Image (cartoon, rainbow, N blue to C red; front, side, top):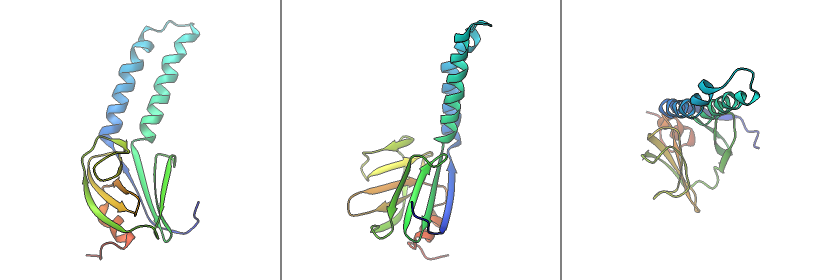
Length: 151
């Protein structure tokens, strides 16, 4: 991992995604919790499942982007999974709209999409592929990449 100082760091939280994942977790594990019998060790399974689902929902509803002098990094939650692109390989960085489903989409008309919310994104292009990274701070991210002059 590169140890250059971070010039830009921002985390976007997909509140609707988090809410929907929480609701799905409650619907999936709630009946098991209600139907569990005291003293039965298998009654722990729905509680463990609900706790894990809530943890994953929280982690994967946050997308962070960091820019250093050498690279651009983006990751979900606590830093895993992590993707990076050397700034030397970047051919362009521009604002884009992103209206795909939430999550990681390997095949979109423009490239690979990473998102926790629909709306704004920054498109990072290399000679091999284009990465669409959702953000609610596209102006500052583009400024950090040097793709936009300060207003």
